[in-house]
Length: 461
Image (cartoon, rainbow, N blue to C red):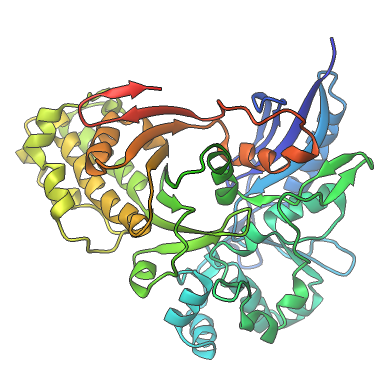
């Protein structure tokens, strides 16, 4: 049996680390998943075990190179952001990969923003809400002022996707999707590093920038390797490849993130305070995004509903869409005419409701989703306003929720609303970015499965 030509993608999340193989039609043909116990930094805060991750990348890639079923034609990477790996003069890792959830020193944060014009000014210039260590550039700023010896020892600081590429190529590059995602490093107004980066000497620690579609290096002098991408930017690539008319991708999970690659307007103070931000696509273009903590709220409230109505924890999955119940609880028409106000990260009105007024779990659950949709409308409108968006694609958990999808479709009646399914979107995006280097076939037209929703019925495409 002849070997199958594939592209290998390392997709590294906070929890799951995956090696995925796609064939020339971009169908997933092999998957290897691994989880690692976290280690701790010098202060005892949990963080990624870089040594274990590095060894796994080397070993798993070596095994797949010798797999009798596949011929690896090229390699690329997608990984979570806000995470630096620090190399010394010998190009050895010598500091922890600090956890972006670690609290940032308040006085040092104040010092930074006081020095460079205040939170509002810097946030608008860098399209980065004030997020502490989630602004990865602030991690380097902290090292400079709190660990100067270690900072001076840093030869290169590589974002995680570029470190993964370095493992196989020994080549050192930065990538615009990692640099341009709420890092505080990139000035969106002048399209280059912010002035503080040079003034503080941070630029001397950053590797040269490489185009996301370029070859970073080779394995065995024959297999081209990509530079890697930030996973959020990578997940957009399948949609950008498939659709040319303006759209919004509503990616739902713990966070529900509305992504508009066709909104290039500068962030306002109001949008920043509503937890909006911009990041750079693999083509170096701004993508405006707004976030809502709706998946987490859904998880918490369905636990309360299960306890109150004496139902299983996952009973919500059996609740069918009932238009009459929606009309009883609160119409979307009222939602659409309500004031767009309140922080998007706040919980919905459901947290204030008395569960005793609901005659059934079904009625209460319809109210919960309606209240979540009220917040979702506000959040999505932050990136929608002023753009000619024709479609909203919903992927992730809520795309399977019929009540959510029907109400969203009614709320945005002038826009086509689709449930979208893309297998391993971030990994697939990283694969598509390298298409020209390994695959002579045209991009397939079926990489995204779509289902169109209206308030009254659903239509299969």
